[in-house]
Length: 418
Image 1 (cartoon, helix red, strand yellow):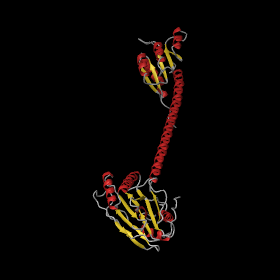
Image 2 (cartoon, rainbow, N blue to C red):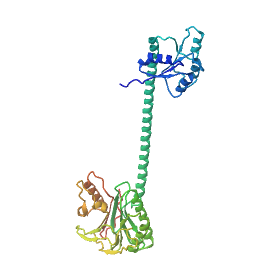
Image 3 (cartoon, one colour):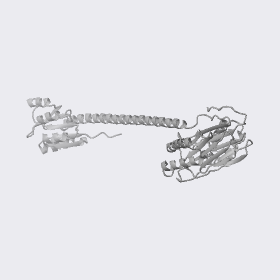
């Protein structure tokens, strides 16, 4: 149980013997006895202290007890502090009434009866202690309310910031998704579909289909190192440069070289990107490509045999400013052939035991679904990889493109993305 707070009892008398007598009578109360010898000293003490009761001598030189009491009552801190006058006058003296007018709660006539003095002082000390307990309790309540209010404000601010961040992330993801093709590419000769799934709200992977000046179809897949907002911004810059260069040039090696120099000037130190840029000729299904450090592409025959592996032809973008990226030819796609392009987030997806998904599993999934439309193949591959990862979130962005060569008589339209 918390001990009751000690109370100050202010003893004011100009006679040292009287102060000693008061101290002897009251010391057993266990409170703080503060002794001063003038009204001025009393007023000075009351400037900075709260007391339970004031025992104030009436007859003092300079400033008597009545004048002192009147000044005490004019001060906000002690205007309600109980005052007991100590006097040698009889209680019917006119000066006693003057004391009550000055704010006294009682008079004690000298010489004091110790028991009477102690009992009167005890009443006011207990009243002060109870009042102090109530005040401290109220202060604790106010402090608790203040802290609770601050906690609620902090939580509301955090919720607001989280909601604002979620909205910014949502908008960033929405903007980035608009940079990707929104449907399978319409082509009489090819069934083309691609998807990109960022590891976070936004990612550094990129894929695109770009009609070229010479009538060919540009097929692009790229991977900016890392994932999140930074790589997403660099990916958007890469896309803008690439589309600008494709408007004025047709040589793939030249386009990738220009793109490399642009990113080398803009990318932060240590950042790079891989890129595969291929050109499909709708008339003879030939493939020419340039690859800047990107993982290999694969051409599969209708029975699932790997007919060609499209290896990189240069270093990643932004590594060497003057790097060269020669364009090379791949075997043309025959009816039923499939071209698979990936980013490494698929091959390097981790299972619960930290094993990698690997390219062999990728090719096996594609073979199982090879007779299905391109969109069904990319969906099946993504779902298989996610199941392989289990409850674990992917470590990296995952992007893939599947291009199937149609039979010459098949001129069906594009399949819309769900």
